[in-house]
Length: 203
Image 1 (cartoon, rainbow, N blue to C red):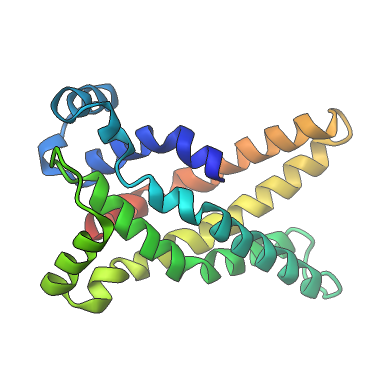
Image 2: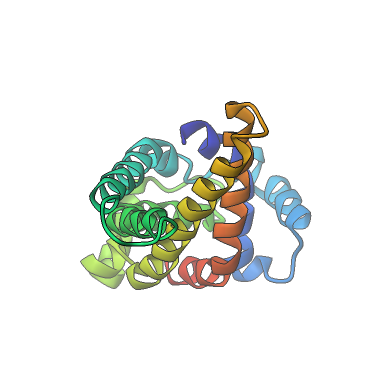
C-alpha cells in the first residue's frame, strides 16, 4: 500500500487537478504534469503524499480484515459462492470510509493548491474549519465516498477471487495473484470513476 501510494502519487495529483482544479480544465494528463512541474517544480506532484503514505497500511488492514471476517461468517450460509466475496468486500469498503474520507480530503486539498510554498496540514484544516465548519472540513463528500467505495470493493473481491481461482490451475500462484489483482483493480475502479470526479470536486 505504501509503495503503491509513493509510485502512483504523481499521477493521482494530475488526476485530482484535472478533476477539480479550474485552471487545469481541458488539459491532457501529460499537459497537466508538465505545467505543474514548470510552474511549481517537480515536488509539486507529491503534494499531499503524506496522507496516503501514512494511512495506506491502516486502510488496507481495515478492508482486508473486515472482508476476511465477513467471508468467514458467510461461508456456511446458503448464499451463492460468488456473493460471499462481494458482500465481504462491500463491508470492508464501508468500514474504511470515515478514515478514507478524512485522508482524501486532506490529500485533495493539498494537491490542488497552486502555492509554491505548500500549506501545512494543520494550517489547511484550521482554515477549512473556519470557512466550512467541522463536518464539512474533515469529512466532505462522505456520502459520495461511501457510494464509490462500497460497490467498488465488492466488485474488486468478487473479480479477484474468481480470476485467481481460475488461473491457479494454469499459472504459478504468484503470477495468478498479480494478474487477478491487476484485473480486479481495473474492473472495480472503471465503472465508478464518475463518482470519483464528483468526490474530488466536493472535497
